[in-house]
Length: 316
Image 1: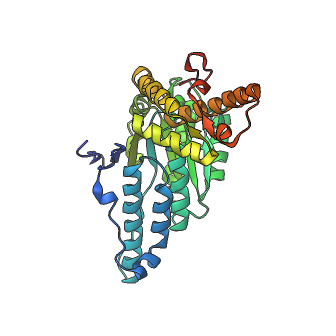
Image 2 (image 1 turned 90 degrees about the horizontal axis):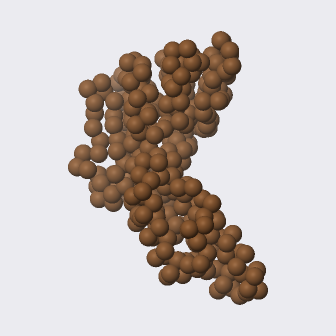
Image 3 (image 1 turned 180 degrees about the horizontal axis):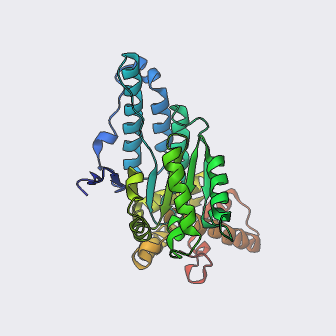
């Protein structure tokens, strides 16, 4: 995609995480020209180092640099007696499960705390059941209590589109109205991130004409490529001190490639890879116990037979 970042007519920043290594090369460029500058901008350097541990997320890395620059220049303006204005930083995350949405929300909360945008920088994860009550008035109470817990941090609502599924009489609408009011009345006291499948989130936002404009930043999280999923496999196995035989590598690559094509928008990406590997580790353990083989090389290596995908219990 030539222009992964676009500004809509309503002023929202739309970001598409293309996962391409050559996307937006300016995201790779450093602000640091001397060691003194590196020390001065240690917060940005540290968060960038942390982000480098994750596969893809090129445009999130660019966004972090953009927000850092804005906040730092604001400080410079304040020192020079110039006017400094705040911005609402509520966000929409759109994409399949396992594409890094929760991880990014957690990193953003931490980053905002270090830059004094948020006082605490904690992440409160919620879903429909945490917001919607059982009777009139109960939903507003539950939602306000959750917002109170999120003060100074980030409130991350996954599968947010479920709040708009029940129509006018559903209590989900009451949760939306309460969130919208808090976004306006307390817009600089917490950051609200709504997340979910792309198509469902687009429909959800269309239900309330005033809702889209309240989220100035929208980020799309596309499915990982086969190569990126194999990179994630390598990272996960390295963390667990396991290796794949050549046959297992080929088998997993073909399996993942096929699943990406078959499952499309419902594929759970990194989450599926993690569950697949953990099942493989359990299968290997049973095999080694049956073989009575406890040699170091055997303990390290996951083989092709440890991934019988035709009998797997892991859902994609």
